Image (cartoon, rainbow, N blue to C red; front, side):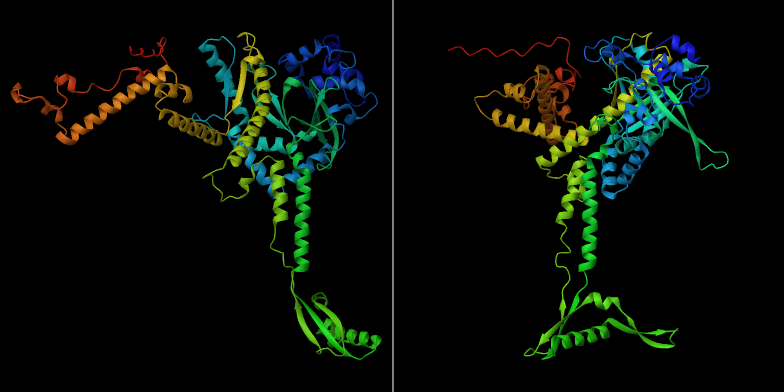
Length: 580
């Protein structure tokens, strides 16, 4: 089977077959037993990025087209996988997980992940949209039904929070596409998350531009010692067999992906050290100590020191019962040593005195600690005003609004990164169902969008409307500026909006007139407009004229009820200038 593949295509697996440095990897076993679905995924999915690279002036050269497996001829696995040049990927992941358990970082990650998952009025978290494609409603409905079926495999409502958290902590997220070997036309039947520390992408060239596939290290446990891993099976997987979602952040050499919390590593270390230092300082400086000023008179310095030592020994020890010595003994008391200072006082002094030395005076000052907490939140792009759970958004100043808007844009970038990985898997699903080509679709026609955080966008729109209203009120009150012009220029209304507004003003005036009639004549005021028997009373009712003219028309009709812009609405014509 491996020979047949060599004669066919010259892709990712061929490079591995020719140049892999391990002796234990049998590709007949790989294609036959370990990954029998490799060829199915290899024949589906998107190859547009690879095709563009082959026609690029920069990327299309012999050096860049050399597979990664050909670079590491005599290396081990870690030198083969170019995106993972550091050997201890598992250790790096453990460090990030320990960081994520730090209380401040955990709270910040929760703030981010909570904003990433939002439901719309239909209960959807992510939506499918078509762009620049001419496809009838029936076909669109078929694709939408397939998308709803596909997106349910990920259970974003229950597990979306966990997925986003893993991307932030580990930097990578892998989903294996599950299909039935005998019924590939049914498409993807499910998605299984893979451990990010056991799988690595294999890149086509040293620029890390094109992912050719993945290598999964499947652990094989010792049957005699189940807790011990006997070996690893290296399973190549085609790029379309896995939905790969990453943080979009490279390390300094652009050799592997970094998680988002790497930005906070320095602030995290500093904050933890400052917290430890504050705790140590408080423990040492907290007790109030005693100062003994002992009068030694005119004793010589050696005798004075001996006298002080004798007193210190008496106060540093306490009486206790010792069973070994069958009686009371003087035992060393270290607490007395830590809490007392002894000084000799010469002749002419006021005698022996004992005073207290106060503990640390600035133990309650945490300004330096809060500085590093704020620095940590800024490194994680979480607005610092969220540090205080009691703070609300009443009277929010522009600086806080700007910080929240920046945070919302950051959330949208995370959502787009996640949606791009789901989109690739959905296209693979459509190709397996033979819908992608039959409907003449391209990757640019399909767009996945998460529901963005709307709270602060709505607040921004409210502030915009407030500014527009202020400008309109200031100019509409000017006798030299027409109200209609101000509506169109400063409120952004079109002709339809202006006419609809006039119609609603007319309806409101009619309603107010009717309410006045009800207030003065009661609910049967219409009957009072026409005298009994139709006789002329010799005078006109208020608003003289025909009864039909006095009775307001039924509400409805007019440009205000169109519900949308008419097909051909004439523009407002300027009134003719008065003749001079």
